[in-house]
Image 1 (cartoon, rainbow, N blue to C red):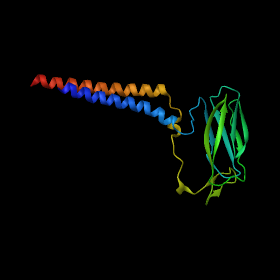
Image 2 (cartoon, rainbow, N blue to C red):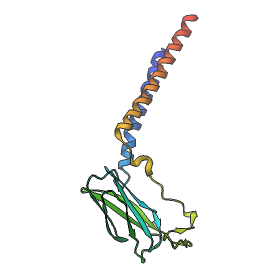
Image 3 (cartoon, helix red, strand yellow):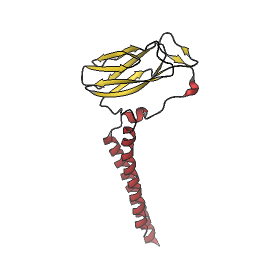
Image 4 (cartoon, one colour):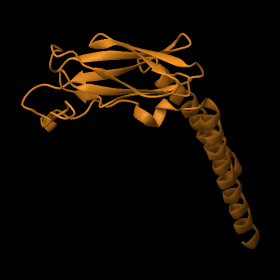
Amino acid sequence: MRSIGALRVASTALLGVAALSFAVPMAVAEDGNNNITSFGFTVTPSTIAAGGTVTLNATECQVPTVKVMAPVFDDVTLKEGKPGTAQVYPDAKPGAQYDVTFECKGEKGTTTLTIAGGDQHTNTSTGTRTGDVHKGVKAGAGGSFSDADPLQIAAGSAVLAGALGFGVYLRRRRSGNAGDSA
């Protein structure tokens, strides 16, 4: 009778692991920006004062140029994997968020650039602003899921399922030995 209970626990655990392994890629896909791309891209800093300069970078793009577009600065072409810079328009609206789109071989990825606003001090050398920390940060999937690989997720799920199965095996073996000595 105990082995049936152990099988139920094991099968329930495996179903839970399977459901979780399928939910993670869906959560990434439902990000809203559809930022699953074959190449990486960044805008640094992600919050900048109007008139400031941002650094644009794209990695792992197999073509010699990457086009970067945003409504808050002129289009930029990154050449041969080298970063570039863009000056944010001085009349950019404080507190506004703009989509910055990177295009590599027709594939597009988007990230957000925020224009700093409120009671802040501007660093004149970089154009970035400091202060106004009570607003917090824009949270999301971030880097932890941006490079999510379905093969890695499946491998991790298999390891977890194997560990659960081994635990059930040990429990059954231990409960079987306890019955022999009685």
